[in-house]
Image 1 (cartoon, helix red, strand yellow):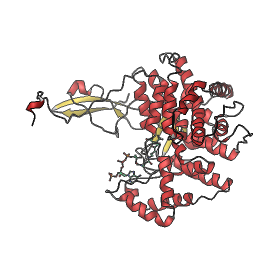
Image 2 (cartoon, rainbow, N blue to C red):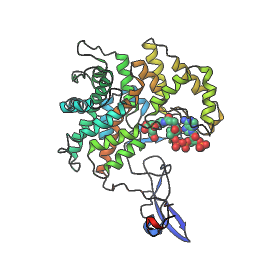
Image 3 (tube, rainbow, N blue to C red):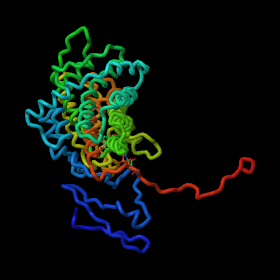
Image 4 (cartoon, rainbow, N blue to C red):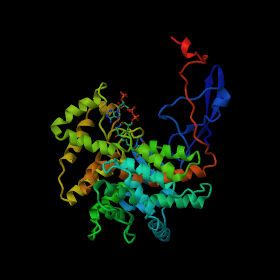
Length: 429
Ligand code: SDX
């Protein structure tokens, strides 16, 4: 709690409001008693100034372009850590020692298989179904397999559900890709690490040994780390809201996947690469910059702007460096990367973007790397969902364990009709 307090004067009455301070970052004004004291709500569509919870998992400083996971800067984790180590850190709050990490990796690897019945769920989809539509369906279906082992009041059962979700997402995402191209599913090979196992299930075929390319494995691991968690973004808030009713954890994650799919959120990585391909040539960039600035044109620069970052998204910096590294090491020259760099350069020298503090976000460069690795554009957001599952389950656990947590139930400013009496159809005009 802070020593400060706030006071609101409403209808001539002064209402004292406690102020709470976190470890770092903005204080919050505690308005939990406001309605009881004043009969008024606050109004904040899109939650631009609203803290929905207390959390110790991720901290973002949008002005400084800082992203910390349990206090560790994202660039240090991307450089030094593994995705399993980051998953442990997000779930448990501390970097694991060697025994803890080995045990965690072993536990996750023993949950990578999915029930054989689940494979039949894929058969119901068209082969050209969007992978996110498939994932919403099959992850939601997991709740029909584990409805009897999810007493969410039991921390141990919450942990098992979390391990299952982290372990099975790579298998399900790889199955969604295989199904879309008509190739057979590959079972997990638990002699491989998490990222290598995913790459093999995705790009391997039954008849051949799949050699994991270390450059691709390192890039994929870094991409997973960069997407692992991001405070109370739209999809994480969706998981928390669904979880606040006590819903099945697998259904909660399916809700998060549905929210992430939107082009304003996780769907931006797919939209950004499609946009860069549509621009196609640096000579056409001014045309698209003009469209992005035109109030009457719904077009936006996909992969640009962020609700929180009003400086560089630190993940975009790492992603840009990784794009250069991967294309060079794979000896690929992709004109789309040149378009992306020139677009960033032009946009960041344009007063519209400078004044509105619009910088490249995590989605601007990721598509260039994923395309170089061999993923079709439609798979990009599914890869985001795979990585973000770690953050979603960490945030879901934190929410369930929070004694102050209640079911989420926002109010509204009502602008509809005042009460009126029913009129029989024969008496209406
Ligand atoms: C992710 O929240 C998270 O943490 C999300 C995420 C995560 O890890 O979970 O970081 C992942 O979702 C990244 C964002 C991916 N989305 C995109 O790249 C889509 C393009 N960006 C925008 O749609 C937009 O920037 C948002 C949705 C990301 C943020 O929107 P806000 O905060 O609601 O801001 P806004 O829409 O009110 O825009 C402010 C102004 C507006 O102009 P005015 O009405 O004030 O005149 O900036 C303009 C917007 O028109 N603007 C853009 C723009 N983004 C904002 N103009 C052109 N191109 C853009 N990309």
